[in-house]
Length: 153
Image (tube, rainbow, N blue to C red; front, side, top):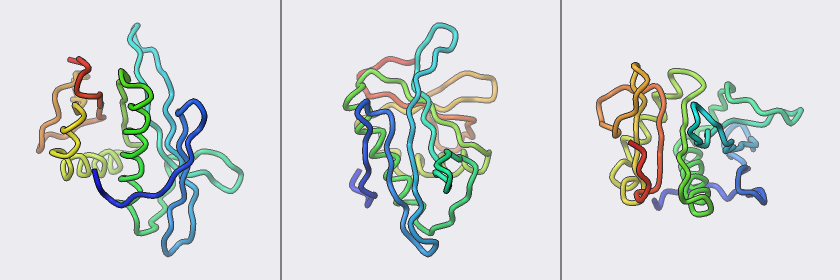
């Protein structure tokens, strides 16, 4: 994707991506974190996204309202691309910290689905707990993404 995004700093293990949102509320320190999770014997990476507060603690519930949401989400997308360049067989799962955030992420996926699907497979988590290939118009609880060459379902 060729959307404007923020420059970011990457940790040595490529599990943490830090950047600053810039807008009317000033510079806000953001972070994208990937953590490996074992669920029922299957491994995946959880994607967490949020702000660092003044004490340096991660907060995924804060609402920044810095009027740069698309640029911030494009930066998260760039982190996913970079992460999967290093971990090409990764299955990444993401869920908003609130239903409204999950909905916002779904709208972003919908908006850029054709571009995303050039390199990735996208799945949505249904209320019954099963994943399906992402479909516009369906409401999902969470999302999963893999590079196109990985079989998930």
